[in-house]
Image 1 (cartoon, one colour):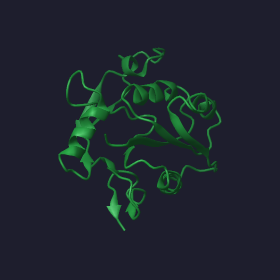
Image 2 (cartoon, rainbow, N blue to C red; image 1 turned 30 degrees about the vertical axis):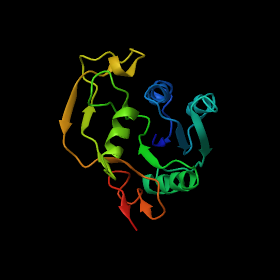
Image 3 (tube, rainbow, N blue to C red; image 1 turned 45 degrees about the horizontal axis):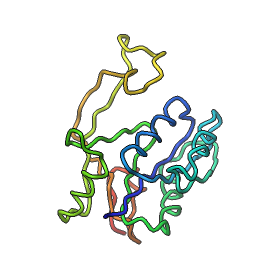
Length: 176
């Protein structure tokens, strides 16, 4: 069985972080998170999952959001984690298996077994509209309208020395 860990950066995501963490745990992924300065309770929610799916949580606060710096720090956390594969998914990203009734980790493990060394994800952006209910607590029910575009979202890659997933802001890992 392949060892895949979900990794991500969070900051002030109290409205969705609990549901997001549970989503990836239900999909079969242990998680490593980097909090880069949350002030709204996000970090505390993440702490409540330590030992229950979150295998590592660090806080590296700074004043301005710097995506490249955050991802570099996340790379340091994952370097010696022992996981063979990393799935980069932030708090506002919910990935699903393309196969109905199949968990995402099963789908990704099958892709790895087929010999792929990177997996591209299709991207559907969900946006609030006047027809959506901002008071709905379940993010999956709150935002129902989306747009689709086939962007480069290579989010699963091997956890190997020399893999840079920060320069392209987590969209395209590359060998350095």
